[in-house]
Length: 352
Image 1 (cartoon, helix red, strand yellow):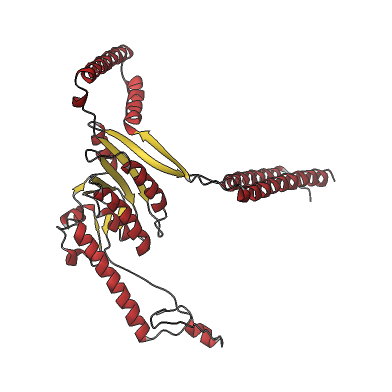
Image 2 (cartoon, one colour):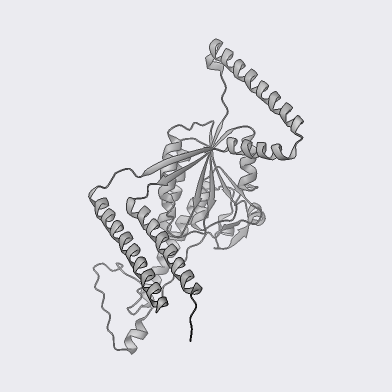
């Protein structure tokens, strides 16, 4: 009897908490629809030089002799003050001769089949192009196995905006840039790839199931009405004809031709007929095929640039709506509630 009472009280508390959370979420959702804001999100910029120096200092603090470390810090501080004083004097006498470090702007693209990250990429490129000059560089860390033609076509066009502005564009591929991913990469002035990164797949593929015989077997008719001879070719539910297939393959071949022309335009040294078979190459083999320019990871390249340039990582963060934030919070609350409930049940002892 005592167990049933305790269990009933716990269950009542759990239901009360859950209903309260649902009511709050529902209220905020309804208010959110009434008060939509136009702000999409914000740009976050991180100076990677500072990150590198901070980690280097943290390591030195541990591994170096304390007295030597103090001397090094004093010498570094003295050197910085002298440089700042020298720059200040030069700025007063000949401000036009002041030289600034080149800047490298690091962007990231992690592509799915729909190239969803193109929305972030668009905002990041627009922001960087507002201040970048021909002395700067944009570095894109790219990872994608490809996807929809029109989506990756748009992503490639976004990168082409950089080229039209005359700003050097470098693409680094650590794992994979295939199909639509390679379409993006080939826009760059320079492509770097890790030794075993997957490159290429310059081809087009489409597949779909057909349930016509299954429907026919079960006496189900399927009708599709179109206006225009090629409004619809292959279909999932109707009966496909040889003419439908021929037209579908013709469209695929035309898309493949456009893809090959695009790669040839941007990678003039590539033997397009040799590489446009849909095959893929690891980094070393891709270098032999001139699909990439150098074997190097993005970490190594950025580390090298830190020595001579100011390196900034730029990321556009889309603003989450209140509904999304509360949805995440509600999910977390529900998970914790379920975990508490399961833990309580496991701790109870039953008599038979």
